Amino acid sequence: MNAEVWERLLITGILVGGGAVGYLLLNRLLLKRAVNHLARFGAYRPGLPTIVYFTTPTCAPCLTMQRPIIERLQTRLGRWLQVIEVDASIHPEVARAWGVISVPTTFVFDAVGRPRSVNHGVASAETLLKQLDLEDFSI
Amino acid sequence: MDELKNIDHSAIVVSQATMIVLNLIAFVANQPWLVVFVAAMMLFGTLVGSPAFGFVYRLVLQPLGVVRPHLLKDNPEPHRFAQGLGWFFMSTAALCLFLGLPILGWILVWMVIFLAALNAFGGFCLGCFIYYWLARLGAPGFVKTPPSGVFPGMRPRRGSDER
Image 1 (cartoon, each protein chain N blue to C red):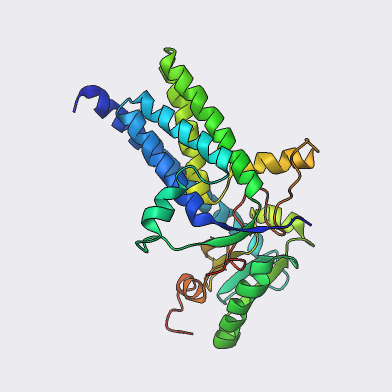
Image 2: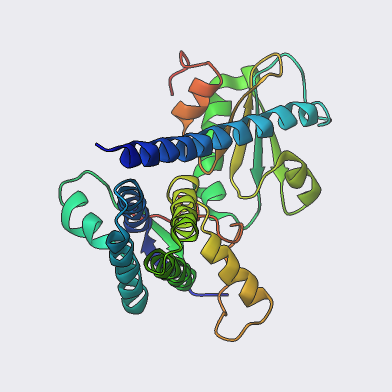
């Protein structure tokens, strides 16, 4: 291969790599911001793994998929899990502050309030359990 | 409320991914004719109302079971508009490449690569977003509104898919 092709491959690598790093940084920023907002929920009890679940009444995937999944998790894990549900249509300012642009969106925190993951769209029970580090609770 | 249709988003994602690969090959190998080919396919897709490289999915990947259908309730018009916008960028890029403006031409190609990647991997379609904003501003011919609970331009989520 000649020098020009190598040069173009290098540019491609830099641009593609830069894009991937940018996406990862954006997600990290979102999670970093989320940790500052978690304690502001009156319902938040420190010491428990937490799912902050953003939804709206008209969101079909929330009603048909995400809510049943979260209810199954709550039934299975009982008091070992807390779920804070936010109606983004009633509290758009909260959704904005958390950087939520579509519903359902779920933020997962461990027992000490450290943000673990953010899911844009429906997250399966297995995914949420894995993110909560509670894979032993198979459902 | 708009009548939403079942749209197979797997076809859109495969088409975007094919476009990204072809554009990357065109850039690395410095092949402006490949840019012309992608632009021509995008024009064809826009005119017939299907993803430019949807045939890769329909004829190869889906029959082989590599990619499964992902039907979502969505508006087809914004996707068609987005592809048309992509064609505009690609044809301008091709024109620049053949008129001796390679830097501008390749920048336009990279913009298309970036936006296609944002759509395929991030689920955000900038062309669709522009369509919905034009509809909100009352531009003639732009009448659709985003599916309920979906941010303009974002891919609708599962729940409406039929498997």
